[in-house]
Length: 350
Image (cartoon, rainbow, N blue to C red; front, side):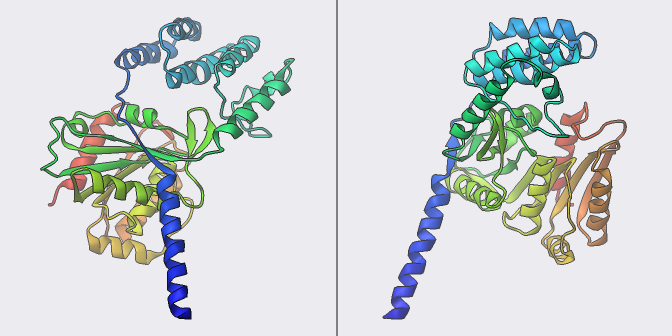
């Protein structure tokens, strides 16, 4: 009787844990990128390289055009505030941030010696800064009252539920969001032939700056994968895990530990902060895991990446290691080409 009671209790706890994970994971309806904003970003990128004031004028005009809050956050925080600060127009920088806050936006900030954004030390001198930061913290705390890991699925053109498709599961870096991953992983190959799953962490560092849970991130991403393969026509022998920076590291962990049975990993300027057991590499090589490791020669993490590349060779994991000249912790200009050719390398059975 005692044994039966123990088993029932254990089963109840397991169900509660599984239910808890399920309740904290949510599939967002598919939403394509705004084509007008994509065109705008191309124009802005060209202007950014030569004329900050013109960039400010374009972004200010765009605020009157775009009402999507993620786009407005990009314009207000990531564009206008930094451009104003670059021109040392700190009052204007503070005003645009307060405008966004009035719309409900809150921002990713850190204080101390490594303050972010770097202009924060200048804003500290402005009247109302403490009130502004208190409101920022209040909005952030409210958003984090109910944490949910979210994912969104992009189905291939002419999707047929009776066929099975390869899948790419994408994890953002240290901070990020789904629209930013969509922007970075644009590819006709993925659009046509793949199921693409974008994920974002459950914790808010800013309005559209998400962070994965530090303790349960892997269990939640495994749960995301399981939900996807139970809903969509996925070829589970053709799974690619992908992501930049910390997203690359998460892909590496999930792949080497075989928590998600991946055929390959597409790691963009991945961080590799600690050595992993050689057995993980050996077992992964035996399973046929393949890795595309794409890095910049000026990346602050390049020594970690070189070490990882060496270990991939040492333990027999087939890999493609590309180092781009004259770039750092970022995607190269011709990233879409390397995205597609890395996918080909991983899926090619030769």
